[in-house]
Image 1 (cartoon, rainbow, N blue to C red):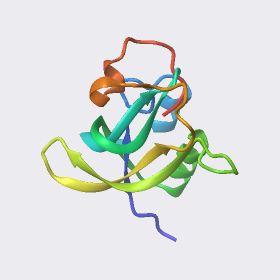
Image 2: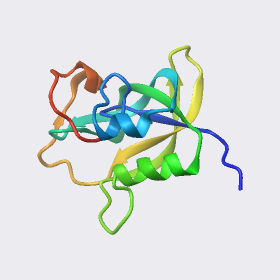
Image 3: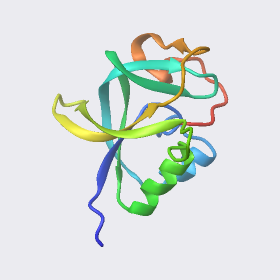
Image 4: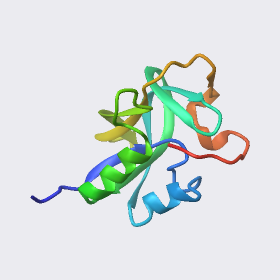
Length: 135
């Protein structure tokens, strides 16, 4: 069965400018389609951020995923499976830098936000640099 390329909105450690180690390996070969925004709220979870639906704006990048294997590897990294997933992947409208709305897959944080801090401006890249491990 043929896989049609899909867009993935990334907002944390999978962003090309932030990806190091395993995240960098996972996005290697994915085509960068530019910057974009999505409606939601972004939280600092320590080593990585979490996006939840809400009235804010979250900034990130659009990547083109060209195979089912790439998407499965990204889902595994984001811990989308199992009884207690860390993230869930949903198809949401995003606004590209040119103002055009399109649909893209987005990883939404799936656990309680008890110890999380909001990220003002919705841009994880604007936080002071630190070692990061997901999203």
